[in-house]
Amino acid sequence: MGRLTGKTALVTGSSRGMGRATAVRLAREGALVAVHYTSRADAAEEVVASIEKDGGRAFAVQAELGVPGDVHELFVGLERGLKERTGSTELNILVNNAGVMGGVAPEETTPDQFDRLFAVNAKAPFFLIQRALKNIPNGGRIINITSGLTRCANPQEIAYAMTKGAVDQLALHFAKHLGPRNITINSVAPGITRNGNPVFDMPEVVEQMAQLSALGRVGEPEDIADVVAFLASDEARWVTGSFVDATGGTLLG
Ligand code: NDP
Image 1 (cartoon, rainbow, N blue to C red):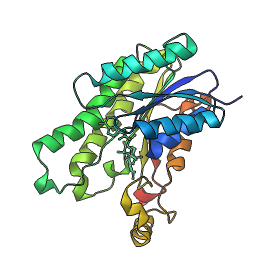
Image 2 (spheres, helix red, strand yellow; image 1 turned 45 degrees about the vertical axis):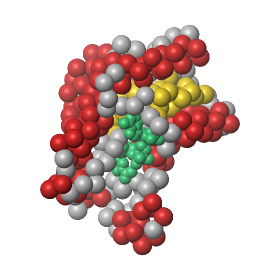
Image 3 (tube, rainbow, N blue to C red; image 1 turned 90 degrees about the vertical axis):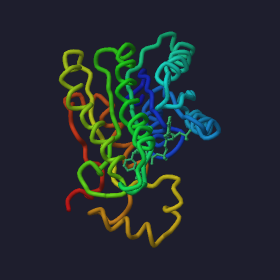
């Protein structure tokens, strides 16, 4: 029996990257996982198939975040999937992972780009939490993926870092609000972590990025998934409102 047997989880943006690794990890611990995606249905279905092949349980849920009606659409699919499989719409674990990066110099960032970053990265997690609290029972878990860039300068990503600074606030304030319900909420801050970006196919660039961490490598999606799995488990019951540095020591300076 896994540490999360009998639990249900939603991982936003889990068709690829660290969201995928987190969905796989939580399912391996026994949770029934909703694999959320926006455009890549094939990738999400592949994650579900991989979890099921491993003996776990999962289903895919589509919804574009950052647009009107996003949270409602996601919860229609989520509740349908949960009800079919468990007979209830109870959600024990919410992982706010979906996010988009900026990659635009501050001088060139347009108001539309800025609004989009905030809509997907900051507004959507807030309203997902607000909506999910109708389904999360006492003792539930909320984990928000933020970024080491809230503590380490990168001028190409000012607007993006601002969105993640906003995400950090969720753990601080909601932890106090949700304490009486024994619901914990924490931030996990990755450093540079391997994903589908073509830069990770360029060994010399990967080597440069690796030097930014104290441990001399870039992060792997599983490095983050393991931290999330801990925070989702009963072993982390006394941890709430925290900022967990999962950057491999990149923030040490
Ligand atoms: P990826 O870029 O590999 O994957 C992004 C995921 O989010 C996909 O599942 C994608 O779905 C989904 N997604 C993107 N935009 C939307 C949207 N508008 N609505 C719904 N879903 C969306 O992500 P990473 O693993 O690189 O990053 C995951 C999180 O970690 C993000 O919040 C990111 O900001 C943060 N982070 C990443 C770092 C890194 O170095 N990788 C460093 C620090 C933080 P689909 O496949 O359908 O497009």
